[in-house]
Amino acid sequence: MKITKYLICTFAAVILIFSTGCAVTHDQETVGAYIDDSVITSTIKTRLFDEKSIDSTSISVVTLNGNVQLTGTVKNVSQKNTAESIALKVKGVRKIKNDIAIH
Image (cartoon, rainbow, N blue to C red; front, side):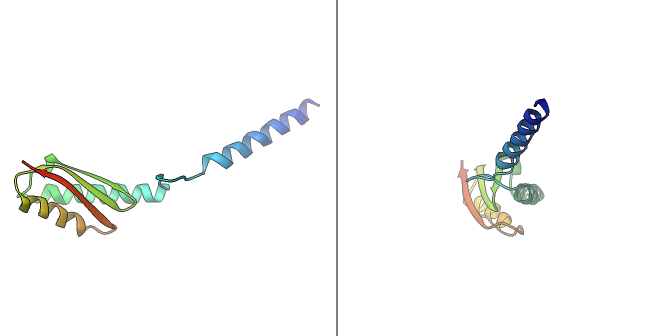
C-alpha cells in the first residue's frame, strides 16, 4: 500500500513538473531566443562603444525577440540616427524602437 501511494505521488509530481516547467507563454522567450537577444544586445553595445562620435554610456539597449529598444540621451539628432543605424546593421535585429532623447 505504501509503495502504491509513493508511486502515485511520484507520478503526479513528474507530470506536474513537465506540464508547467517547460511551458512558454506570451512575452516569454525560449532559451535559444534569450541567448540570441543577449548576443544582439552586446553586439550593439560594443559597436556603439566603438563609435567615438556617440557617448555610448548614455544609451541603453534592450532586445526581445529581435526587437531592439534604444533609450537614453544624446546631444543631437545626428547621434540619435547614428545609434539607430548601428543597431540596424546587427544581424538578427528585426525592428528598432528609437526612444533616445536629445538634450
